[in-house]
Length: 316
Image (tube, rainbow, N blue to C red; front, side, top):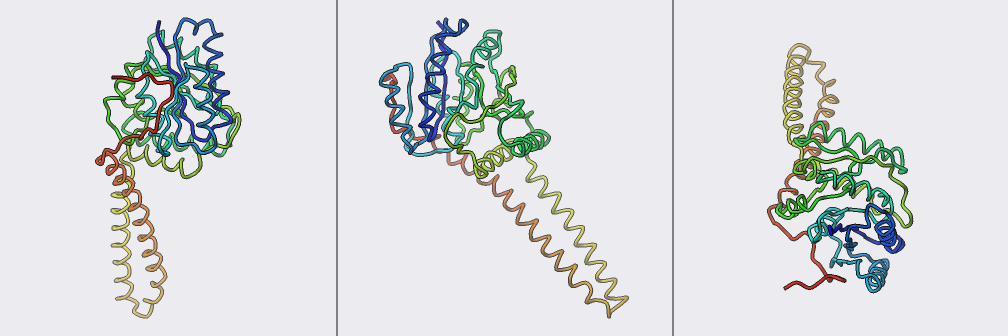
């Protein structure tokens, strides 16, 4: 009997973890296409402080098919799910959010496509109940990254999908301390099947994605799969150098021909100085993001540090 693991990362989801685990159990027990599979549910908790861990302990105590990993601290929105995927022992893994924005009802469709031969089945957001401004902003970002990336990026893919164990073995060999799953799927993934869905609103609780986390994701994607920051810095530096040389030449000509008019150049020169300074600061920060990314990879820190596990079989 083939085994499917449903991996659910969570952070402060006390109102959702029991409902999402029951929804997964129900669909495996009631759907005719899933009854022939063994399954388990594996939560990885990123150091929740709202009672999520107590709730997970209750669930694991009465349902042995539900497992949990507790991290000693919050290791970020990318490391924790990636680490959880590496721990699974299964034929295929489904990555699912705890807040019901990823529809559980798509699991049978994912499994069907997997049995048709696809090693990866991706859930692609064709619509979203989130703010239209945020959704359109994401669309612009995906198209920009896709245009400049060395890898054909997947638009509106959040990680929700099914992954064959062969692909999980690729992830285990990467040894990447700053993994970006969406980019890894696009870069190293097998032939995949994309399934479109409408992203629902959160069932309960408050989203933990904010502008800071969105910026972190954007920078990780940009520094991992594009050279756009460095290339733009070089081009902007060259353009500003030419601009300043022309400005200096014009100033010299006017100063020689019309000595009395030299005062009119004070304001343009100040504007040019501020322009060059602001552009340099921007690209210094952008290049700094690349340096930070390289530094994290060189130090090779662990993805997460575990505090304990629930319902996991002990290994020799």
